[in-house]
Length: 193
Image (cartoon, rainbow, N blue to C red; front, side):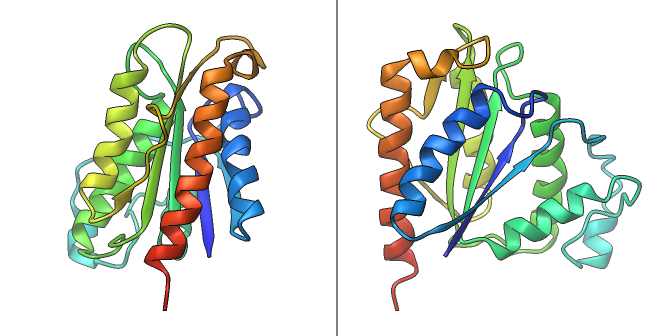
């Protein structure tokens, strides 16, 4: 089994990465393979709403100038579990995460069943406010495609601004630990033969 995490932070190794790695510790302890994909520094444009993906139905976005999105979509298709993680920017996900959601989402709508029965988890980071909206935006992606959403013992959020701040948020770090355990549990149930 494999979980791929998409880090929507423009900071490659900031607080969002720290939270993903905390979840990964639990997944790896349960024998689940993990992969972290950072969207930082990638030139990812938003969806053009050209709907060519509905013509081709080849599980790819027709925009080829930033092929990175198609690599991300392929990673989603191959994985058993998907983590979407983003800092909160003006009470929503980062522009990088929004572009990924919009483009991968339209391709998934065009290729019905592409993400069915995968396990998804959203992680939001905020300085003070807005994490709930970012969390909801990422969970909505999972809800649209027949995926199973994993929670923790509290919403999958943590507080932090400067790199490392989330490690001072004991509740946030504990939430990530439990999230990793719950995700491992659900993945094993979903993939039991």
